[in-house]
Image (cartoon, rainbow, N blue to C red; front, side, top):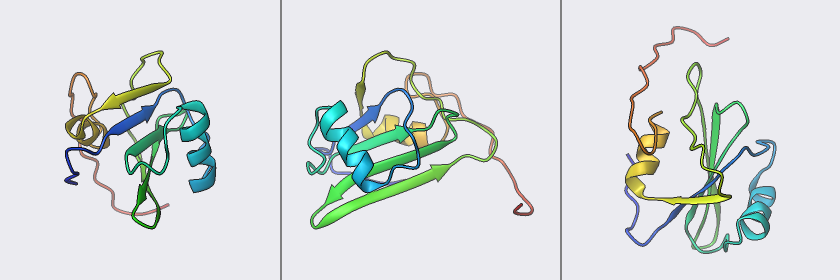
Amino acid sequence: MWIFPSEMKVYLALGHTDMRKSVNGLSIIVSECLQKDPFSGHLFVFCNKKRKILKILYYDNNGFCMWYKRLEKAVFRWPKNVSEVLEIGNRELFFLLQGMDVEQPLIHKAEKYSKIY
């Protein structure tokens, strides 16, 4: 589990995002669509249409960092809110990364894999 400073905010870009976008494309979405500052040091979370991939973008002291998580069988419980951006806490981000619903934590079954295809 990651531990973030309490002043660090987490923003979900609701809807789906083209996961071919990298740092530059995602930072443009943050500034133009979400109306937030990509250099703020806050976390910005994006999900693809099939809800299998999450990317998290943030700016650290001297550059951007991007985390990527792909689920093999399950899907992320991405909020169905109609807003463009949703602010959540560190706890809710942990729930989301574990495959749980941000509002009603329901745990996904842990998957076991024996080989890579």
